[in-house]
Image 1 (cartoon, one colour):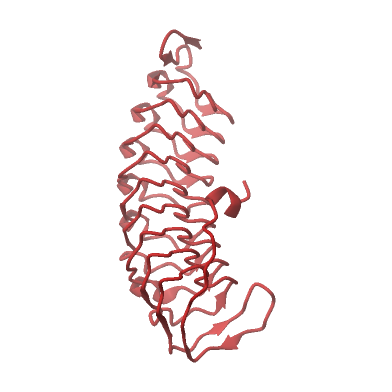
Image 2: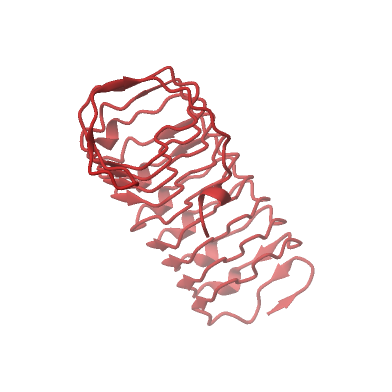
Length: 272
């Protein structure tokens, strides 16, 4: 492998598996040609993680990759756009996928329709995303911790296709401060949610929880920090087993929230 000016990967045409930390934390790297890596099928953790100087990246050579490790392209803050089309064969990702890519303003997730699951920190701290269509991930039955956490520019998230979802990890959408409304109708099968469900979604003024008819387990800090909520309708009956070990509490009430907490960055919510 040699580098002259913008880095060009050469001599790796037979490489099928890129190990951990492949060119990670090369923050002075401004361009990269991946064309010799056309036979890659797997990449390890932290692939190009922290390459903050990259402003664009052509993923076409990665068209055969089916698995990526933790922190794939994480903290590539200079990327403002990324075409995921070449990743149409991707079935596994190890968490923090594109986490911290704060320059991305839009992202088409259609090529990820064959993902078997998403790990912790999926798209976490992608702070410039304003809207996201999650329909390509509608087949998922669970998502890990910190799903979209810290994406505070999001004003709309479409969960229409998420009717298979049965569990979400902790800090689900935590810190999405600019969300004004959220339709939970597709979450009718949701049975379990981790701690800090919608934590610090300070833009929400109302939230209809009545679709959550199958919810039986809820972690602590439920809607904590959602200080603009004037009322939350909990007239549905569900049994909640908290993370502190309570056996379950039937709930029939209307709750007014005035909890005010500081927003925590994703790195404090998610232990890497």
